[in-house]
Length: 168
Image 1 (cartoon, one colour):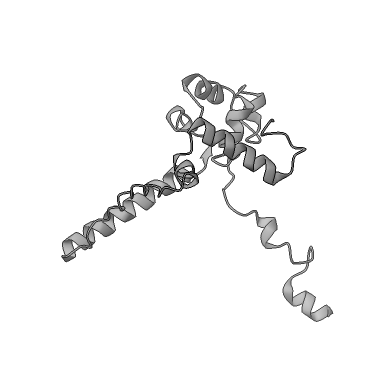
Image 2 (cartoon, rainbow, N blue to C red):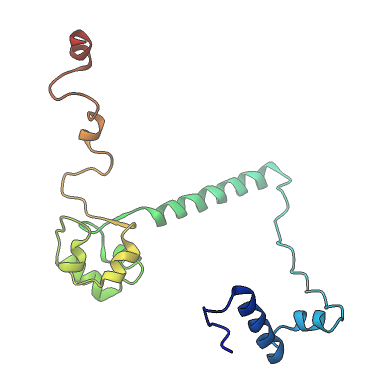
């Protein structure tokens, strides 16, 4: 019998797989229970160690400062990198980007979209997919953030709030 045969009912397949494991001796706990013996308890893992709470104001201040530094480092790591202005060292922090890829990215600037690094700089598509949320392609003079059109999307073109109230 093949334990991976999909034509058998699920219960039968599970029983066959268990029989195979017992026969191979791979499942010691189950084989001990099947033999009517008490299974040996699993060794308890060591509890996670936590540092003691700070006892003085100086220790509390130091702990607060280190936590702030850790948050800042994490934010810097997740901050998107602009492929049009990043240095070679910054580009090399991306997953799968080495010195050669960073050189090609720098040499083929400017990019209109971040996807152009695949076509212009010949960066592998898998590397782009792995980093697409960590890169951006800002144009000169552009500012990262919501577009001005997004802030006026609720208004009619060429009318202000007061004009809309007067008409209605």
